[in-house]
Amino acid sequence: DKFLGDGMLAFFGAPDRLKGHAAAAVRAAAAIREELDKDNLEAAGEGRPPLHVRIGIHTGSVIVGNIGASDRVNYTIVGDTVNVSQRLQDLGKLLEPGATAAIAISGETASRLDERFERIPAGKHRLRGRGEATEVFQLGKVATSASPPMDVHRAQAG
Image (tube, rainbow, N blue to C red; front, side, top):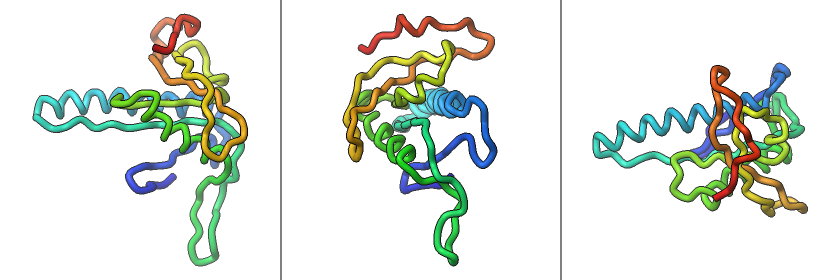
């Protein structure tokens, strides 16, 4: 959707409805992590420092459309779901300090994923601006459609 300083906002499921939007978002995050790992290996071979990213994914209702004043309108999304995603992204530095790609997903997003997605429980966290603690998972391995399903019950935080 937009770049915000050194970050960016992306969303799935609008303007057209997308069945499996949560899985699509998580697959995109996993692809970013995989490509960044490759780029960092190349960078290390060239003596360059590695890059690190944090990604937060939450699923929920939003307001989407052309938003703004008459002289400056942007197609974007707003709402608590966007705020939770940003808070999860920020939480990544505590959950996986130093990780190439720290990917934190909410319990709501995790509940929409199937056995191809390894969800590592990270506990409940109080996110700024929220009254209740939010269940959080870290994203582990993501199986391709050619891979056998993973047993997500074996995943442990650690």
